Amino acid sequence: MSQAQLPIAIIGAGPVGLAAAAQLIARGLEPLVLEAGAEVGHAVRAWRHVRMFSPWAFNTDAAARTLLEAEGWVAPDPDAYPTGGDIVDRYLAPLAATTALRGRIRTGSRVVGVARRDVGRLHNAEGRDTTPFVLHVETCCGIQAIEAGAVIDCSGTWHAPNPAGSHGMPAPGEDARADRIAYGIPDVLGVERSVYAGRTTLVVGAGHSAMNAVLDLVELAKSAPDTRILWAFRRPLGAVNFGGGARDGLTQRGDLGARAQMLVESGAVTALAPFLIDRIRTTDDRLAVTGRQDGRATTVQADRMIVATGFRPDLSFLREVRLGLDPAVEATPALAPLIDPNLHSCGTVRPHGEAELRHPEAGFYIAGMKSYGRAPTFLLATGHEQVRSIAAFLAGDVAAARRVELVLPETGVCSTDRSPAAAAACCTPATPQGVCCAPKPELATEDSCCGPKANQPRVEVEPAK
Image 1 (cartoon, rainbow, N blue to C red):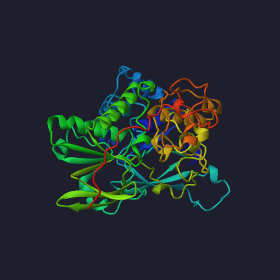
Image 2 (cartoon, rainbow, N blue to C red; image 1 turned 180 degrees about the horizontal axis):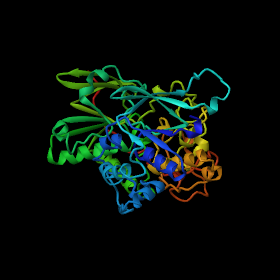
Image 3 (cartoon, rainbow, N blue to C red; image 1 turned 90 degrees about the vertical axis):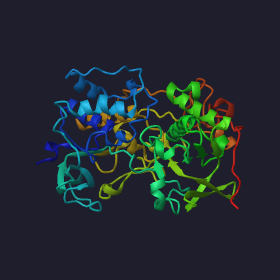
Image 4 (cartoon, one colour; image 1 turned 120 degrees about the vertical axis):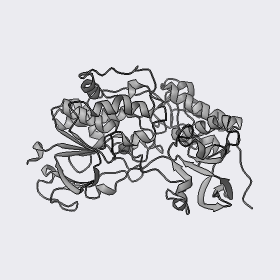
């Protein structure tokens, strides 16, 4: 079978993967969705208790809505804020059950390898770009080989969390104590309540996942007063970005950061900042977490840890694909400068599509959260725009692929982890109040940026004896 006659393989049946399938169908192309989990939205189900800070209007794809509405689906209130469970129950599961997608999704199918048929990564064979892809797929019946004309990897990063260790590797002892360490946002107010109630939990991380975990633990403490929360940041507290507050274009996102910042300032949680974790041991049936604070070795004790330090892409099954990746961000070289927090000081990223997502391997794309590599600024609406553009390009509509069909909300905040010289890289005088832009160091001042100031209170623990 020629490459043009083969289906386009989509890895992952999450929101972006199913949106990709819907976009391909709208273009007259044939998708084949391969999902490792037993059901669609496998990763989203793991955080079904978490309410999103973006409303429904940003969380459904246009082509997917068309398929759903053709079968009588009624869209949720666009201004309401769904939980992960809502996304699965009211959107993903019905979408997977539509006539158009039913039969084009294979669950229990984990992709363990992607390559060109009969052509290794090293070989510049003639016609490489028109040679079909071969995917090795692990199923209950063993490994199957599936050919595809193109591949869109939408597998996400949920199952590849960053570790607690400060070097980017698991801290010595971290893996051995996995039974006491959760990654992401555990359901501390629901099914895991008994695990955290009345105990001391150390939360590691400064992003929205960490904020959600801390806020849930504080809520738990209202009915379980012995619950204690330690919150460890890798940066000095004055450099922690709690968000844009009222300036954020997504009000719930701004409110989340403002509430989290208030907890730190009020002393409702014990902030450890900066705290760089070196090792994790067990002492008297508790975790003893040793780190460095201002160069001093400090040990804190906790019953549990929640590590919410972000995620990274799993590239292990793409070893035979010619990837073009930025060495730091692990996104494509065209996308990386737009999202690298070391360069792009603000959370807002302009919409982008097929051109920015190209790899040296023609016909292969990474879309969705995984496309951002290690950068933390992804919004679901961005993924929908990515796969719309990719589908248009694969269908031969280059003009539509290049056209931007998405306007993202501003975050209203710049990074505050910068020197005085770098602080000016935030905004230009022409930029509206609370709206940040790409670095222009010669044009702005610290006060023109919208991040939290550096004079916030600091709470420490005694150094280890």
